[in-house]
Image (cartoon, rainbow, N blue to C red; front, side):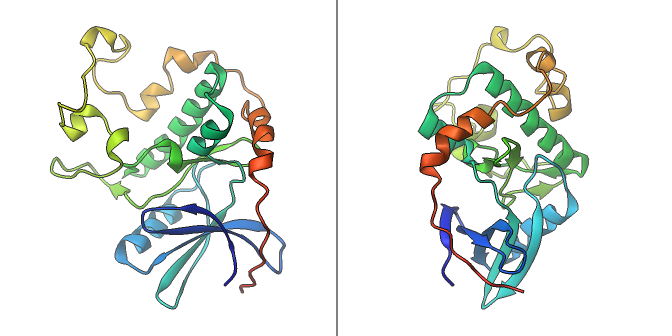
Length: 223
């Protein structure tokens, strides 16, 4: 198989491919056929939302699992920031709202993502934000003896590594919440209240990314 590699995760590779019959571009995640990989597909099948990567198909072939998803041509937030610089406040508001909408959809299905970070948030060609990578997801409440996710993106109270983090003074927390808020509650926060509706503010930034996204197109025929 000759595909264009566009990403690499902890457990597999991600490729860009073209459906030979429909001429539709898509992303293909290739991982070893393990129980956790099947679980990821199961979570993707249960929730469909505009701010979550959409599962198209999944196949097992020669000991590997091939997960076909919508292609997000803009890449990850981490890649976009690295190439174009820090986001504006309007862009931050937009990304925060879209991520919270995706998380709220997961929580309504009693699913926790547990590895939210800029590398796991993608942007498609229209500037829409989509959460991806459900390898660490879990149904139900978190266990106190589990440490799942990426260390530098975890809350200090989750890691309990007090020598690595300086906890914020209580006076620096928002007065709108007494406890750590849910995604649904954060959507009502005043920071997002004056966000105007309309096209994604990330579209202009994606134009700056075009020189970096000239990937060689490879064709993979599959049934």
